[in-house]
Image (cartoon, rainbow over all chains, first blue to last red; front, side, top):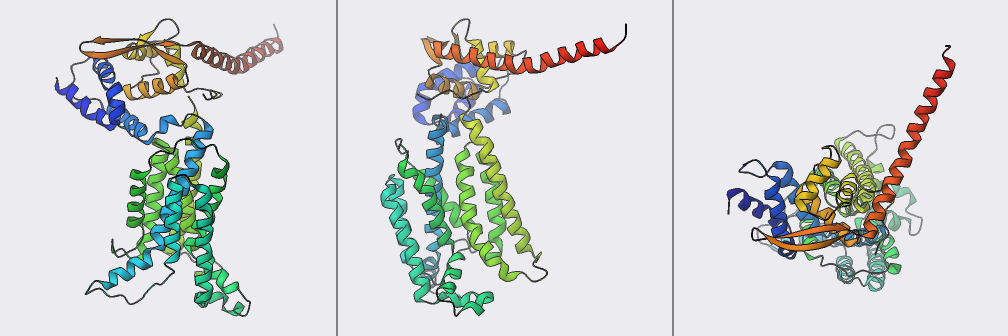
Length: 318
Length: 118
C-alpha cells in the first residue's frame, strides 16, 4: 500500500462504516486512477470533497431527496433543537442551586424559576425523539401552563419596571413577565413547528442521539452558567458567532442546521427584544454594545433564513 | 419514488450525459464529463459518488457490472430509461432557454440590417 493510498483510506473514514464497506474500494480505485501524477499527498480539493461527502453521508443529507422529506426532517430537527434549548436554559436555575450546594461557592443573586417547566420540556423532548408528537404537544402546552401558574403565583410581574403603572390591570403584569421568558417562546415556537408534523407522513425516525448530545453541549457552552463560568455580557457575542457557524454549516453541509439554528436564535432573541425597550434612553435608541449586538443577532437570523432558502433549494436539486 | 426536480445541477447533467453512449466506471465518468464539458466540470471523487448514490436512488442510473480489478471492486454504471428521459428533458429545457436569447439576437441583428441604408 502506497503512502497516497494510506492517506486516502484515512480520509475515507469520514464516511460511515456501512458506506465504506460498500464503496471504499471503488472510491479508492477512482481516487488512485485520478492521481495521474506521482504525487504523495491527496489534493486539498479532493480531501475537502471527501470530508464533506463523508459528513453529508453521516448526517443522512443525501437521503433527503424530495422537498417533503427535507421539510419533515427540518421541522423535526427544529422541534428537537427548540426543546433541547428549552430544557437546557430553563434548567439553569436548578443548575445554579446545585452549584451553590458545593462548599465554597456563593452568589450575590439567586435566579429562581419553576422546576416543573424543564421537567415537562424534558418529557416532551423524549416523546418528540420517538416521533410521538401527539403526546409531546400537550406536554409542551402543559409546560407553558406551569410557567403561567408560577409567574402568577409568585407575582413575578413586579420585576417589569417600566410598566409598573399598569400594575392595577389584572393579569397584565404576569403577561409582561411571560413574554420576557425564554420558555414562553420556546413553547410557542415548538408548538407551531410541531403542528405540521402531526399530519405529516412519518418516515422512519433516524437516531438523533449524537446530534442531540452535540446540541446540548453547544447550549451549555453558549449560555452563561456555572459550568463554563461565563459572564452574561458574553452571551450575545457567542450567540452571534454560533449563528454564523450554523449559517456556514447549513450552506456547506446540511440546511437543517441552518433552519434549526434560525428557530433557536429566534427563541433566544424574542425575550431580549421584549425586554430591550426598558433600556431605551435617548429618542428611543440606545447604541450601547448590547443593542448593537442585538442588532447583530437580528442580522444573523436574516442571514440564516436566506441561507436556509437557498440551500434548501439546492439540496433537493439533482 | 420521488419526482425529479425542474432543473438539475451541471455536474449531474454531465454525469448523465457521460453515460448516454456506453456504461462507464467511476474514473471513466470523471474523464468523460470533463471532456464533454470542455474541461469545465472537474468532478471530485466525493462529488461523483454522492451524485451516483442520488441518481441510483432516483432510478436514473444503475449498476451494469461489478468486477474486481487490481484486487478492488469496480462497478460500471449505465443510464436507465428514466435517466435518459430526464437528461433529454433537461437538454430540451436548456435549448428552449438558449433559444430565447439566440432568437432575440437574430431578430435585433435583422432589424439593424434593415435600418442601415445600403
